[in-house]
Image (cartoon, rainbow over all chains, first blue to last red; front, side, top):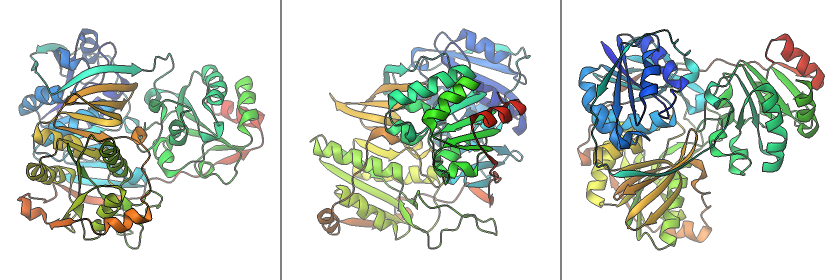
Length: 309
Length: 248
């Protein structure tokens, strides 16, 4: 049996989500190959070769792969699947974008966002924003899954797999990259951060969000998250959103500031190890999942906390 | 341009779902149902494109039980022109939905299909991408902006690090994210008008698509319950406790 894992990367670095997906592939079983499709992604292929448990790395280069355009990734991966029993992708925006195309072409019903594996055809996945866990058994000959990173530990990096360069279809494809606005930040990426401070609508404005959240995050070396309400109100950029339809996180410490705790938000963070909630409404649902709740005015409590840590 | 918008009837997003005691699924009896929120955003986007004069006709389609007709009426009241109800009481998986939609598109020939990025019941996030693959169309998923210009569709997408803009040839598939727009509430006159708009009734069999499930549900269970912890008096106590736990 053999599994192909799609690497998630930006042509310079491999994301942690890839290592977690390899762990899931190990639980599935069989030989594991990792596909690095990119442009100038040699370092990424070398990094993927170090992931424990990888048999070999397939390295494909081309203009359309720089941004891993879905149409190109489909053309590259569908023929490769002749040699594999399963395709595992991280449930990142890359994986969510690309993987269902391949599943459809293989006539396979994809299993999204798996959080558990019970054999080679049975998987666990959350539904209804994580308010129910469904175990499904697939009757398809090949399995196509995306893997929720918070449910699997990252595989180590002591391996030394070989890297094989493969040809990639050059197109033309029906979509073209125009531009990207990537938030430049030295902060840890949300899905791999050990600590996250997350702000909600109670912060009141983008100015207050930045004034209160950034110093605290700097002090803690934390990633910054936000509730949907804060993102919708323009206090924080879209990639900060934690929740059912945003990022799913499970840090060691999650500090929710001025977040009431709608079920859609809880869906994105309730697997965090320690949850702290600071909110002046003592009835806020966030307190029902918080290990430590502080009923206080965030405008005084947050600076005090920043001072104290 | 003609736009097709598929809509799904799901448990209302405010309802707290309950898992059935026999672990066969979640309890849907006497629960408020609504249009999937992402599909509302899709309908709204189509209506805005029509209001700008870029779109002539909006066709909405739903695959589901008889009551999915209400979901179609909601879309018609928001401004869609006509509906297609593909009636089935079975749960239809995203792959089969995509196959039915492929056939509908063969008959309707839209140049743009706008779908919600995911349904909030099964959280699959697959149908749009699968449909794009079956049709060999380009896709712009998780859209926060859609601009039609010079026969191309520019889609700005919400991706992990920020925003990405793609230019798509037409015909194309777009899936909507939360920030694309804020859907309108239908006005009473528009709700009345929607009652007169046509809805065609079909069945999956009319399209020759096999909707047999590929995934069988072994069980549906409650997630592990997280217990509420303790309230702390002040910031000093919070810091002490976090330090004791080694969290900071």
